[in-house]
Image 1 (cartoon, rainbow, N blue to C red):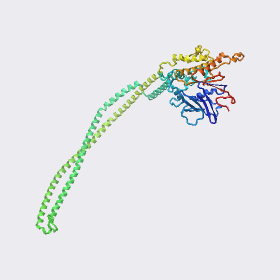
Image 2: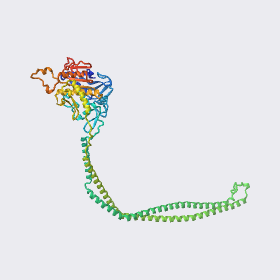
Image 3: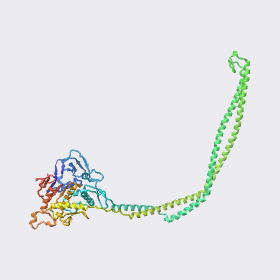
Image 4: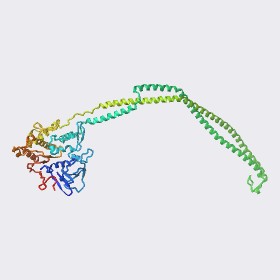
Length: 613
C-alpha cells in the first residue's frame, strides 16, 4: 500500500507502507498526522486539510493490494470530489482514463461510491445497521468503521469509547457496525418499531388536518339547527310532502287520462290523414284515366268520319287492302268503309262502358274522400280541445307543484345538514382516536455483543496487552453492557490517565484486527495509530528536579512497554499497522517493516510528507 501526491511539475510525494509495520516519527508540524488525514480522505472523508507544502500538488493516490492479490489505485483531487479507480499500480499523474469513477460520499441508492466499493471487497456491502432504539435500520457505510482503523491523536487519548467516533447521532449505528465485525451478522432482520419523534410529527399533522376538516364542515353548518332539530324538521317536511302529493293525485290522474286520450286522437288523426292522402292520389290517377277514355272516344269518332271518305280519292294503292291501281275495284271501297265504321262503333261502345264504370268509381271515391276530410277536421277539433283541457289541469296543478318543489328542496337541505352533522361526529371520533394513538412498541431483542463474543474478544485483548507489558493487561476485560468499555484492574478506560487511555485504545484496535483476521470476519486489514504509546523518559524521571514530570496523573508508560509494543507489531501481529510518533521509537529491524523520519528540515533527510523547496 502506498500514499502518493502528484501534481504538474512537482516530484511525487510518496510513502510506501511496509506489509507489516510502518513507523513515521518526527517533530510536530512535519505532516505526520496529515498521513492519517489523507488516508481517511481517500477512503471517503469529506475534505483534506490544506498544507502550504501541498502547493502545486493536484491529486492524492492510494495504492491498495486486495485480499485476492489484485492491486488498485484510488485517485482523488486534493480539493475533493469523485474518486477515480485504476486497476493497476499508479504512482504518477495518470495518462489514461480511469477504469471507474466513484462518488466520494456514501449514497444508499447508488452503488458507484467509494464506501460500497470498499465494503463490497469485505463482503458486507449490503449490510444494514440499527440506527436508533426503534430498530430502524440504515445501509452500512465505510464511515461506520473508518474510526476503528484510522485513529488520530485526539481520539487516541479521548475518553470516548474506542468503538465510537464521538458523534451522538451515529453512536447506535457504530455499535451495530462493531457487532457486525465481531459476529459477522448485520441488523437487517431486526423487527422495527416506530420512531417516536417521527410518529409524533405525523400524529400532529394528522390532528391538524382533522381539526381543519372539522372546522370546514362546521362552517357549512353555521346557520343550521342541531342534529335532533333537523330530524324533527325532516319528519314534518315529509308529512307535508305526503299531504301535498295526495292533494294532487286526482288532478294528476285526470291529466294522465287526457294525455292518453290525446295520444289516441293523434293516432286516429294520423290514420285519417293517411287515408285522405291515399284517396287523393287514387282520384288523381282515375281522373287521368277518365280523360284518356274521352280522348280515345274522340279519336275513334274522327277515324270513323275519315274512313267514309277514303274510298273516293285516287291513290297509288288501296288504303284498305293495299292493291295497286290496275287491280283496284270501286265497290271494294264501299264494302271496306262499312266494315271500318262497324269496328269503330264497337270500340267506342266498349270505351264508353269503361268510362261509365270509372265515373261510378270516381263518384264513390270522391264521397269517401269528403267523409275522411270531415273526420280529420273533427279529430283536429278534438285534439285542440284536449290540449286546452290538459293546460287547464296543469294550471290548476302549478301552485301545488311549486309548493311541493319547495318542500322537496327544504328536505334536501335538511338531509344535507344531517349528513354534515354525521360527518362532524365521525371526524371528531376519529380525531379523539388519533390523538390517543401511541407508537407501536419495539419488540425487545438483544442489540449488544453476546457474552460469548465478549469473553472471546476480551481474551484477545488481554493477550495483546499482556505481551505489550501494559500494567494490569492480564486482567483486561471488554464489556458491552450499558456502554462499551475496556476495564483494566476494575477501572474503566475513561477514568484512566492519558497514557493508559492511549495504549488501551491502541490495544483495542490491534485486538479487533487480530480477532477478525483469525476468525475470517470482515475487517479492512490495516490499522493506523497516531501516538499510541506515551512514555516518560528515564533520565527525566530520575532527575527529581523542580521540573520532574508527574507520571502518575498522566499514567505515562515505561520505555519497556514501547519496546514490547513495537516488537509485537513487527513480529507477531498478522495485520498491517501504521504508527505515527512524536518521540523516537525503539529500533525496529524486523522484516517487512520500515521506519520513516520526518526531519522538518529541507536540507536534512525527508522534511515531511511533502518536500520543502
